[in-house]
Length: 149
Image 1 (cartoon, rainbow, N blue to C red):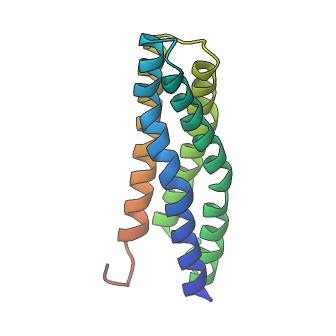
Image 2: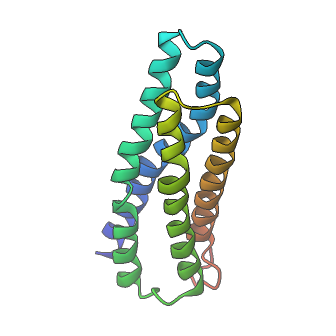
């Protein structure tokens, strides 16, 4: 059962978190193109699509920690320091996405934004992506693990 839970957790992370990190990273430059050429329908459609991808996959991404907790419980590692740090960083990444990235994307999609807003959004997106990168490394390396990884 542990292998099944781990496989679902990893697949969910790839399928749900991967698109959010890519789409969120693509959004600020796409928004700058809209600001540079406000009448370009293709540029407007692009930012709308990227924002929709971020919103939908952020919602789908909830399954990642759900299966993560189930996997950690089955493995008996819920109290391990690397996992606790990963949980905290995952929660922080979720807060950054929900409170800082998505609302700013929404404002830019609605036409309320400046070039400075896209720069700030790019910074928050970078923080979000960095948090996920650290969590990914912790999941692979698992400091203190006896697996030899």
